[in-house]
Image (cartoon, rainbow, N blue to C red; front, side, top):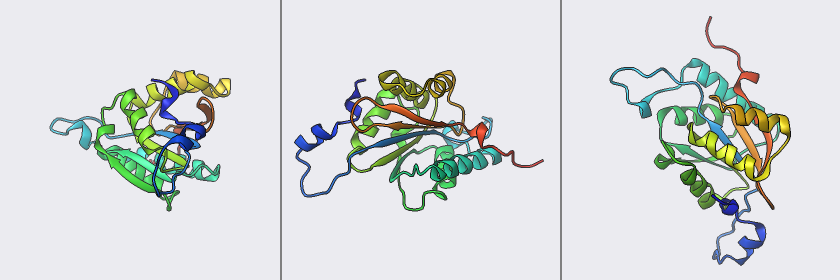
Length: 193
């Protein structure tokens, strides 16, 4: 996949977009759903809910994003129950954000995630994609390899993309760059005893 998932401002100027005002995508937030209940007989994977820790970590990471001034205009959310619940918990910190459920983001490929971002890139200055491993981690790694970021954050991201993690990329002009990594474990307070 090329950096074509992020049309440059110069390329956008050449597009005939009609009378609708468009926004140039400047930031991309990739967020993995929070911790979910374990698989159980008779429970489809797509129907697994967040557990109490997943709700807590989703709220905490979203609050940390908002505290840092990283607030999505638009969120593309997989149609799985756990990603929708992650968004509901996160949305408390982003009351003005618009959410779009996209069933194709469940069990998606990296190519599908890139296509979804490219399709939405003219509709948001900051776009959040709430999805699943392995694709969301693979996509984040792909973006890091295109552009990089600070070595410590890139190293942590390359290692794993745990539940509740959010990776923030600057995607304006030039290659994407990892701006900041929010790991749920850094904000987690366990629910219950």
